[in-house]
Each structure stands twice: as structure tokens, then as C-alpha cells.
Amino acid sequence: MAPALIVKYDFRIRTRNGAVVENLSISGRDELEAERKLRQIYQGCEILEAHRRQAALNGRGTVSYEDVMDLITASRA
Image 1 (tube, rainbow, N blue to C red):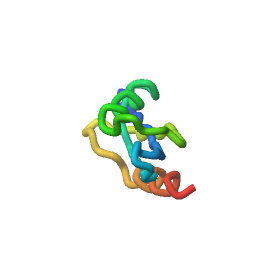
Image 2 (spheres, rainbow, N blue to C red):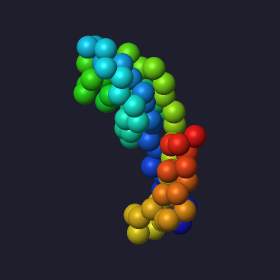
Image 3 (cartoon, rainbow, N blue to C red):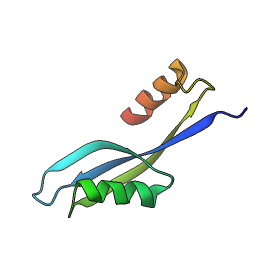
């Protein structure tokens, strides 16, 4: 059985009152769906950056230590 994939998108936005919010992580089938979810929460925001991130899940639905470390190091790059 192939591992399931979680696809998340990390956003950096500017809210409508000018505050910059970094490291917003939203899951979605694609970037458009993640952006739609983001705009429901932060209406009128400006997206400054968007990055795709994915992690493989093993059969039990948990993430391995290596997957977690990959996510941590990728977010600091």
C-alpha cells in the first residue's frame, strides 16, 4: 500500500489592517483550495508568499520522525 500524502501550503500574508502573518499552514487538494480556505479566514488579505509542503503518512496515519524533521528544516529554509 502506497503511503497517503498530506499536502499543505504555507502562506505569508498581510491582513487588511496591515499586519504581516507568517507561517500560516493550510491543507488542500491544490493551492487554489488552500487559498480559498485562507481567504475565508482572512478576508481581504494580500498573499505575499505561498509554498507547497507535503508529508507522507504511513499505514497507521502517523507521521514518522524523519517526516517531522523534514518539515521543521524546510520551514526554516
